[in-house]
Structure formats: structure tokens, C-alpha cells
Amino acid sequence: MQQIECQAVVLENQRLNEQTSILTLLAPVVATAARPGQFVNISCNHLLRRPLGIMDADPSTGQIKVGIRIVGDGTAWLASRQTGELISVLGPLGHGFELSKISRVITVGGGTGVFPLYFVQKWCYAQGVESIAVCGYRSKSESFLTDEYAVLSCQTLFASDSGDMDFAGNAGQALQSLLTDLPPQAGTVILTCGPKIMMQKIAEIARNSQLPCQVSLEERMACGIGICLVCACKIKAEAAGDSITHLRCCVEGPVFPAEVVEWSI
Image 1: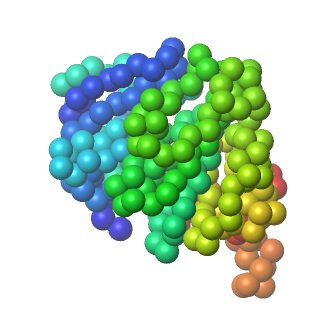
Image 2 (image 1 turned 180 degrees about the vertical axis):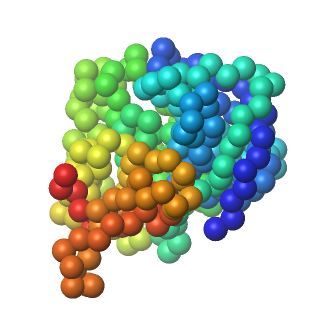
Image 3 (image 1 turned 60 degrees about the vertical axis):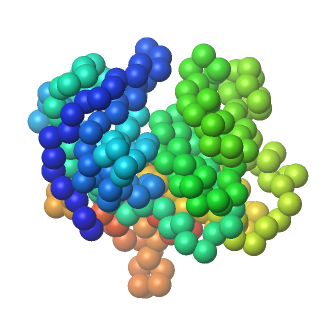
């Protein structure tokens, strides 16, 4: 796995709402190596770095983008960075989405999971792969990236709990509605990122629809390179004669086939 620590220059800090920002960073080596589903570990004003899914990577400009939702002091510090500042970036890290031998991609994102799935949709656009984006939000006022997704010319279905967007309900309900009328097509895959309870529901819907599904797990991390084992997640291990095993989300993941994930707490 190619990875590097670099001092990235902040090129832009785009505030989307009170809790969410997008940082555009100049990190040419990371931008060249990054693949959809991978992440970077970024230093902040606290001891531990913060893992953030890569929203976009452009090798031609050397730029990457990450979406930040403020949940504590570390992410608040990152979301307040100004143009021209330097921050330490380690990446790209992790095992991303498997995108070979597919003909149609359905991404299902909730919350900050919408960010890394944009990278998938951009890849689909560049490769000419048919794609559909399902994005779930609490309300239209808290939504983001809707215009960016639309620019990629993918079919979009924006859902909100408050009922003020395309679909009234959550992302899982929106996906179920979509699949009801979607013509079957060989090579279709569902890729999802977001809250664990949402991804568990998406995995269930995919299984019932006999569609392969990949999930991008979000676990607490420290080193991001497989040494500390903080991010170990439960994976089914029937083939090895055990009920479960533990794999590192930062190395073997964050993306796993949905059927191997042990969802129970």
C-alpha cells in the first residue's frame, strides 16, 4: 500500500453549514495514489490524528478534498483552518472499494458518508459507468453536495427525514423504493457509507435483492496504519471454523463485503 506523510497546503476551506466544511488540500503524492474508499489521517491540535474519507483526488492538480463534520475539538480545529496554512497528512490509507467487473453502481450515503461516495461517483463519471446516488439527510437545510452530485450527471435520489427533498424518509427507505422500479442489470453493486445502523439496513436490502454490497465502516482510530489495533472490527469467520474474528478497519478495511461484517454490538 503506497502511503506518505506530507505537509499539505490548505487551498480552500468551504463552510457548508454550521457543522460541516470541505478542505481542499495541495498534496500531489496523495492525490496521485488515492482510490475511492480510502482515507487520510490528518493531524490537529490534539495528540491523535483524525481519519477522514477522501472526497475527491485530482492527480492533474495535486489536490485532494475531505469533508469535515464538527464533533469535537479536533474536528473543530480542522474546520477552522485558513488558506495557506500547512497541516500534516498521512495517506492514502486503507482498502477502498472494489470497482472491477461492474456495470452499474448504486451509492447510498448518510451524513458524512456522502463525502467519500462522491469520489466513487466521480470515478464512475470518468469511466462511463452507469451510476445512481442515494443520499440521506435530516432535512434540506442540513443537506450538502447536492449540486456537486448533479454535475456528475448520475441519477440522484435525495432523501430527508423531514420530507422536504426528493424522498420523504431515510436512505434505506429511499433505496428500497428505488430498487422496486429499477430494471435488473448484471454487474450492479451497492456501495454504502454512513451510520452503522444505516449500513446494516442497506446490507439487508442488498441481500434481499440479491445484489452484492460493500460497506465502508467507520471505527475510532489512532495510528491509521495497523499498529495500535484500536480500530479492530468484528468480521465473520465461519470459513476458519470460528464465529468471528477481528480485522483492522484501517488496513484490511475500511471497505468490506457486507456479508462478512458482524453487525451485532
